[in-house]
Amino acid sequence: MHSRAEQNSRHCAGSDKYGRISLMKATLEIPDNVFWRAKSKAAEQGIPLRQFVTEAVEQKLRETSATDGKPWMKHFGKLKDLHEETKRIDKFIEEAFETIDEDI
Image (cartoon, rainbow, N blue to C red; front, side, top):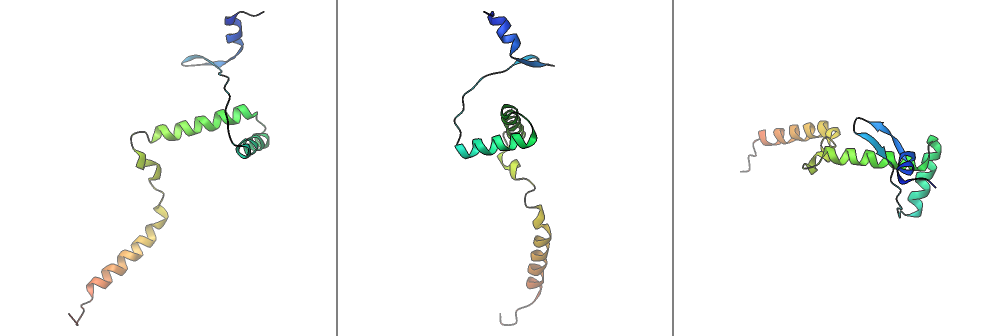
């Protein structure tokens, strides 16, 4: 029988600047199709499913922390491909307003 300290030390993922990081076992309920897609993608990458899920959660946490307090930031720059179209429309409007309507 192992002591609690021995069990915890066996489950440590390593250390970094914050000290030792232990692993947490968790049970998740996810849709079957999501599970199988994740399992397949992990296999394609040659990594265990737990690593794939950990990396996915870490990525999601990075994305959300970058936009905390500024929900509009997640959309920033998504319409940049419309820049040329906006210039074209602005030019059209400018030309339309420069013409004098003689009927008025």
